[in-house]
Length: 455
Image (cartoon, rainbow, N blue to C red):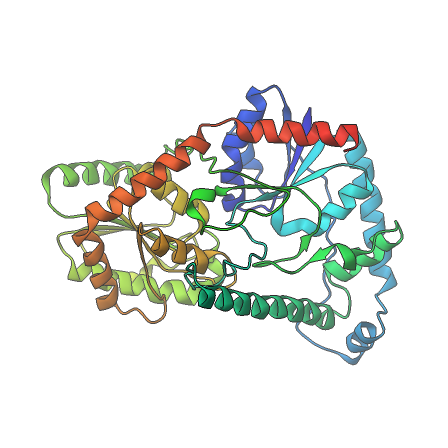
């Protein structure tokens, strides 16, 4: 069977699929990625990729400036016909390209679900790929953008219901504002116009009862995050929990000679010293919040000065000016990129933004965490809450926590290190059952067979 993988060009969306693709290939299936900016990474693992040569999603009009013309178009649903024609032409090219590839099924990124209706018009079945905790509404669990930790009480259920009501209203408001600011030239409005000519009422298929983004109803979802890490809840229908699927040896090499030297120094430090190796990274997608990162990294430098017995490794990302940290503390190493899975093998604690991939890697390598969510719009706040719920680390506020507060939380983790370690080991055991299972392949094959039979 041929499977096309259509994901966002972000490492946080690509990395969780590496092991799944290897498993599918070993089962005899052909897997092809649509390359939208990750060609080098796709090739590094020996995977196939194709470039369409065009973007199906329309180019938005300038949404920053609200003009009378945009307001009129939005008010009377008068979408720019030139954009409609442009998108229709792209869709025709897309159908031609899809006909040449002839996939049996498409793995579509959960963050790009509007594209599902285009595949369905082409009679290609779609499986949504989710790398975060369950995104859809559950009455006993808050949205994953919330910091609230639920319990099995009526008050908690009421709080969760109110949090969901607030989230859904925000999602609806946000969609309306996007349509208004673009004058109806946004992805949703244009897709609705195009698909209506094929007999699809996108408004009926739309799902906004979710933590973030736009969902499409009645599409099977493969959730490859760790179900064991989530809050206890009733499982959603048509959702298959197969995670985590983590390739733990995917980045064991570094192209930076300096890293190899530092790595050897850290190994020697752990053999001889009584201090801890503390790794801090706030994610590759956090560049959108550079002011927050700069402020926090400066706090981390101060923490390192207060804890001279420990060694700190700071991964800043390529867009951060390391000069802002000078003079760098003697016990801090600063890199713009690090092979995280490799480094975690010699760390004692990780300070993280709370991305799902990083948390999974920490659990599998038995590393307690201190979570500082950077973005309030993704799953980071909820992941921090889950770390607290399962007692595998602590969380903090990236704005409110001072260097002294960070220092105290690190000391608290160290003082209760065996407690956190034992909790992580229990969760690791649950995760490894899934991580070493071929259940995901069996589910995918079954879904393809059901579609071929017309079930």
